[in-house]
Amino acid sequence: MTERAEDVVDALQEAVRVHMLAEMPADDGRLAAMGFATLMIEYLTWRGRFVEPRPRRVHRAPSLQPTTLSAELAAVVDALQADLEAGRDVNPRLSSTVHNPFRNVREDEPGRSSDRDLLLADWDIVHLHLSGTVRPGRALTKRTGEVMFAVFDLDDVYLIGVFEHPQHANWAAEDIFADMVRAFPSAGLSIPMADLKQNHPPSDEDRLTARRGAVMLPVAVDGDLHLPRGVGLTTAGTPIWATRWANAFIWRLTDLRETDVRGLLAEQTGLPAGIDWAAEVLVEQPGFQEVLVLRSGDVTVEMLRLLPALDASEN
Image 1 (tube, rainbow, N blue to C red):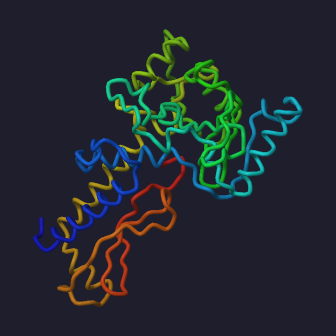
Image 2: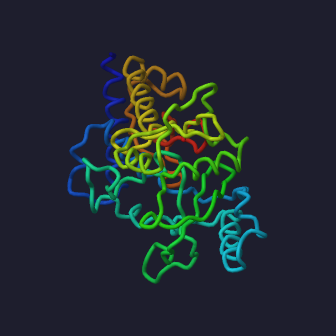
Image 3: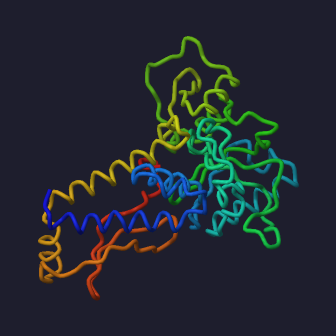
């Protein structure tokens, strides 16, 4: 560890911590008491529930083709598709818990905790309410009994089907995942596990019990086992990709501690090695493009991305 690097890296880490605590909705002080790694996983889990507004190609499952839908539902799905293709913000269609995630935290029961979305953490599936009408004075659209299941990539979105709310349906049912894989076999929405079989496949109720306990199970699709592309969720109910990203981020900070950071900055910028650098998080798009930088006067040096890009390899 180099003493000269230590103060710079400490400043970088503290800037990230301050940023995360400032951005996340208010809680009872639990977040502020967390260690850096745990806090970052919580931040990534919360941020990962939102959808970046950007134009996307829309791919519909066979069950969502116009000829298979009622006229009323076809109009609703067409309106949603138009919003997605135009890059309009669909976050008002999300669960209300994304805006107030810490109102009912139950660490012993992640399946019932308001700060967790286990369908998303497990299978990378977002659920969107079908109404596009924003309620007066609220950041949410009118709630609907049925929701659209979708998987988002950077430039594409895959609409899987319309399902009832979980009070009336099992969102861990094997058919949901299987329909996704069958509808979009070349989209990389799952990880095939070649030549592996299940001797005693779990029932849908078993799957629901496992998910409520934050346990990931592979899914059999036409005889072949598949894992979700993000490799599922942790026993804390957080997506594994969030843990992997947080770990990689901390490893990068550790590498910087072993580096002559000031010397590298001087070499890169042409500025004297002894000048002061201020660390901050540069927010280009809140929740989607956040970069940790060092500034000195008018000079800005990008150090680390705080959030992963939205693609199948990282999310």
